[in-house]
Length: 121
Image (cartoon, rainbow, N blue to C red):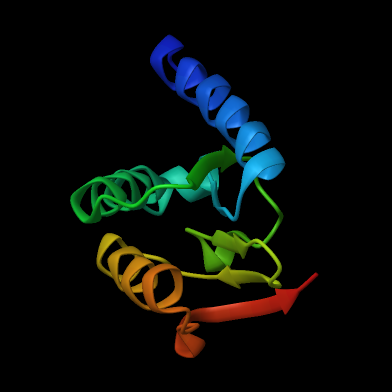
């Protein structure tokens, strides 16, 4: 069950995403938070993403929890969308791998190919 705090965070992230789309380049990170994802560690991965963004002082990043996409065996799954670039979907993302994705893909624009499930529009 989603807490009131998590709902407020989703609301704020959605508002920020809307503002960022209007004004400037942004990054969206969607993390699956269905029951299968949570059972495989998605909450810890989500926390690691948030902590890494804060630690690095990164701006213009929206992190949105989403529902299941039906690939339970590959959970936790995150999708990274950089403005003007393709959606990159990563699978089996542990907290350590999430930090690696932030450092490589978000900061240095280098996709972490060994973790990629798909690249699309």
